[in-house]
Image (cartoon, rainbow, N blue to C red; front, side, top):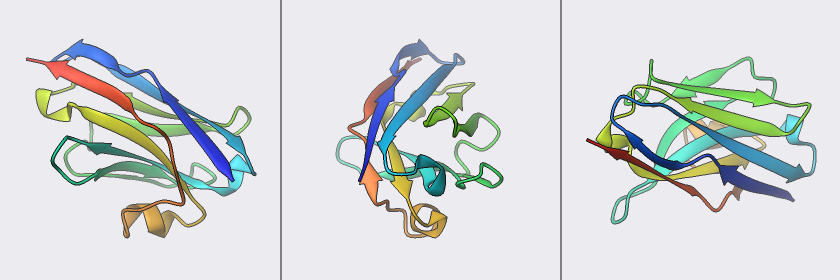
Length: 124
């Protein structure tokens, strides 16, 4: 079992930056691929970014490529999402996710474990 707790969301102006954190507890964090998803009310949850268990491979949605960076600190069981050049369309609840297979996150767009989410609001 893995527990995920997100933090770092908030209100920011367009063009600004935020860094989301996801603290993990439970079984062997460094064996899990990690990802970030986001969801707007009334819409399906959308894949944002993923990182392999070692941190050696990263994947991004086209909509955030070049602006967002995912990273992880396996010594402290944390995964980050650095978000730069934010746009109003990035406004959403952002969820941290963990899976034993990165394929599940990147291709299936699912996960074995989910956090509760953190709200990101970008004003124009």
